[in-house]
Length: 322
Image 1 (cartoon, rainbow, N blue to C red):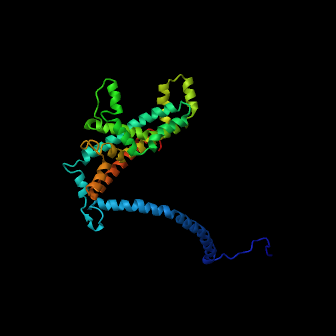
Image 2: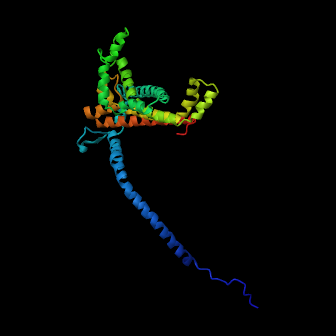
Image 3: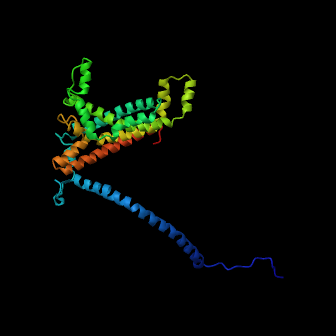
């Protein structure tokens, strides 16, 4: 007797027949993704072209020049010299390491220290005042002012008969040759750079203070914590992300800055205020030694990279995941 309830035997399709439709389905699903990728790259093409023309090509050309001798203008005059340009920067009698690179680090460190301390103090005060937008605008004005104007104003203020010495004389103190004395020239320019760059740091830190929950301050007040304890135990730890951003950006600006120094001291007296960026400018546009200028640029790049990574590592060790 035939069992009518048994399932009918079906023939299993062979390999090519089974994979054929499935493979075709995969091809059909891949085609829209390929079209989307093509459209995405088409929209990205202007940005990628800009990146290649204004970053990748100049970087490659600078790397070529750093191992060559070239006086500019005539590309046929490029002569390979290997690592001679880098060796010349650190040779005996070279001023690049001392005082130029040393001045660069001191200038950046001084700018960061003064700008960070001042911006934290000012941002904390602004956070407790009314009309906070007005105060932030006033402190941000030096940022939108040209470096030439800022440098010239402070240059005249530092003159022997200027405002700063006038205040010192009114207090019974002798006049100081701020920009003419090698011992005071670099600190004087550092003060101006810190004052001019503090506005952006104040904006970042005031925004960071707004993100601190007020409940922490209320709990500290209930526990009887004083203003100093609240500042050191609550405000500063919770401002760490903003402080990290300000430290890195201010330090990078200080390491690469030279426009203010050109306006105020032109690197003098002697090499007292000469920095790496100014030396690169001089080597390229004054002496026509583009190879040495490019080598100095790569040395400065390594310094910037090491300092930035060190800052990130320090903040991560303190518990901030940057």
